[in-house]
Length: 362
Picture 1 (cartoon, one colour):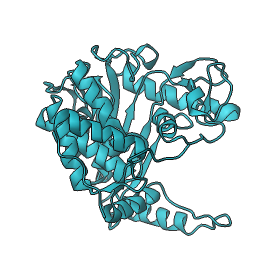
Picture 2: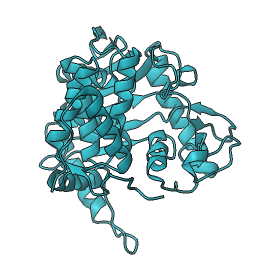
Picture 3: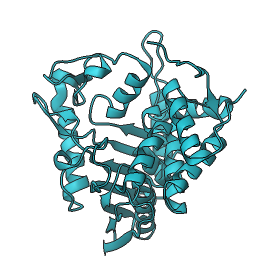
Picture 4: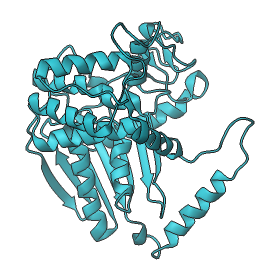
C-alpha cells in the first residue's frame, strides 16, 4: 500500500502555530474548556514536533470523540489534596489527562521547591498522550521529572497468552545547563499500541518481535495484531513485564484506581463511561541532594563522555532526547507532517466543526 490517498498530498506539512490554532478550536467546539484545550494542544504539538507521531496530532480525533460521547469531562473541577509535605493526590474529575498531567506535575514541582521532592498520584483521569511531555515540563523548570501511567491491556505477560498490562509508559527528564534536556520516554511494551494503529493507517509493516496475533504468534501485519510483546520480546520479556507491573502499582494501586486489566478499552465502543485512568508524577530538586552546580557538572560530564563513545559502523551514539531535539528543529523549520490518514481526518474535523482547515506550507 502507498501512504497517499486520492486527493491527499504525501508531503503535507503545517506550521506548529496553525496546528495549535486548529486543535484548540476543535477541542473548544467539542466541549473542552480553555485550560483543557490548551493542555491537550500543548501535549500533542510537543509530541509531534519531537517526532513522536504515534502520540501527537493523530490522537486529536479520539479525544474529540470521547468528549462528544461524554466519556471525558471537558470542564472538570480537579481537586488536589496534599497528604504530606512532599505527597499529594489529584482527583482529575474524569477530565482530559493532559490537563491532569500538567496540573499534577506543577503541584509536584511546587512541593519540590519547598522540601526537595514532590510526588503526586492522579486518579479519575483519562489518556494523557506522551508521558515525556510532563517529565519535560519539570526539566524545563530545573527539576528532574518522572511521569508514569497505566492503560488498558494490550501487552502479553512474559510467556503469557493473553494481554494483561497496558503499554504503561515511563518518562524521565533532567535539566542540562546550556542545552536541551535529557529526555527518556518509553513504553514498557516493545512498541506503543498507537504505533500499530499508525502503521496500519499508512499500510506499513511492523518490525519483527514487537506484536502478536490472537493466538500469540508474532506477526508483522498491523491488521492481524491482537497484542503487543513486552519490552525484551519473546526471550527477555520478563524485563518489560516487570517494569509494566511497577508502573501499574504506582499508577493505579497508589491512586486507588482499578488496575489496567479492568479498564474499559481506550478505543471504545463505549465512549460514554469514564475509564478511571491513573497516573504518577515525581519532581526532584537537584539542590536538595548536592550543592548547587554539582549535579549540573556531573550530568554534563556524563553526557560528554557518552556522546564521544565509539559507534558501530554507520551509526551514531546519542543520548536520550538527542534524536527528538533534532527532529523538533527540522519540523519547526519545515513544518509538521501529516500522513494521508491524518490529512483526511483533519479535513473531516474542519468540516464537522466548521473550522478553517490547516494551511499546507509551501
